[in-house]
Length: 310
Ligand code: ATP
Image: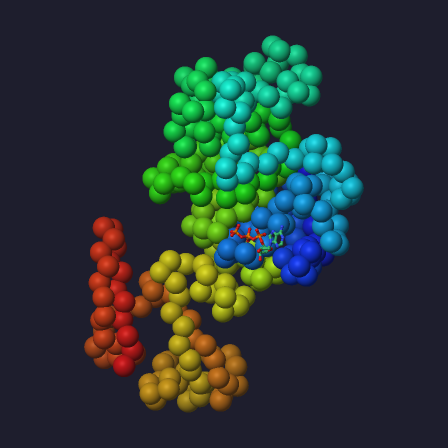
């Protein structure tokens, strides 16, 4: 296990695009950090540079105190689980999980023990003699995780490992990952575009946009105190409501003259964006903002109401 330290990491591709632009962050030993952001923001490229399968343009990558920039992927002692989990089709589940260990020359009996331990955690015990073609997507994903787990690397890297699974399986795999964490606390960096995955799995979340870090914080920090309009709207579903206002008269005044009685810290006259979460809205007749209901979206345990302010 080890701490990961990333300093001013840059990737400029041949076409001149800055896919990753001076990214700096740490993942503490045993911590689970999730990078989240929209498609193309540079998440995968960041991960691939840390794994050593994409060369960085500039910056430093340190793992367990050692600079690893110039080490090959194999020398870095990192295990990566990809979106397309790339199992060997001709090998059984047990052989797939144990492959890396055998290649490193671990004695047969020890490989077998490690494979069985991982299979138990991931509930793959009954499937050890099956080949990948006979498994469901979720089972294959668990095999790929098993293969990473048995190696006991210094660092786990996950690149959108659940994105090929249907909604129900994604939910159960999130549970599996949390369960795996309770057995093996390996330093982990996990990339996803799915903010629910980020919020539910992470000790800390890194929100990226256009190759840069917008905010780093615990899931609740990011939710309660977003550092930018982008983070405010990216995290949370349905997303935060934003309206323009101007401060003054002891509150925030909207374009139509409505005065909202909210505590403000900036000088009167300042133009602001007011953000409020859907769950912060209460219906009433006497105060607040007049609104017209546009659509109702029943979700089962909740009802999402879309409204327009007049
Ligand atoms: P996604 O969620 O869609 O995988 P991402 O956040 O992981 O997105 P990256 O795959 O890291 O994004 O890509 C970041 C940017 O770098 C994108 O604009 C992408 O088009 C560009 N890019 C990625 N790989 C290359 C490449 N080999 N050559 C040129 N540009 C690339």
